[in-house]
Length: 178
Image (cartoon, rainbow, N blue to C red; front, side, top):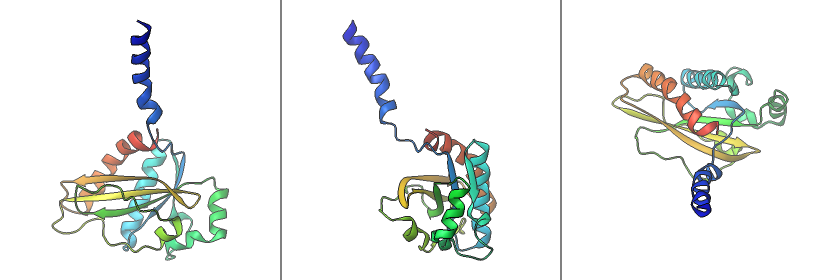
């Protein structure tokens, strides 16, 4: 009887012990897009949703002067401002592609390299029925977590934003808050 109880207890605790959630408490949100309106839309929406679920968030547009590239976030003076505001996690959001099969990238890049990458995709592309967003989280200049959000059955930019806003809170609760 004790062995059965031990096995049941062990199997019940095992998944909890090996879950690898992000445990996100704060984030500076960086949209990696060529179009300023895409960057603004994603940064503001992600920030709003994170704040609504109890995670302290700030868009990079509130830190950088208008027109400055996101790569300026590697400057020591700007990093000190961000740290003094209480942010130690950076999340970079970009479009991974227009397919439902994308998985999070496994490449080992640091924060500086990631900021200097060019954006290849826009939020919406004609004839695309799906778009996959990738979220890359950094602490201490290293990747700590990656996740992908897929938005399907899209027909224009507005439906992408609508699906993004609907699906992101579920992804946060499932993978980022644990």
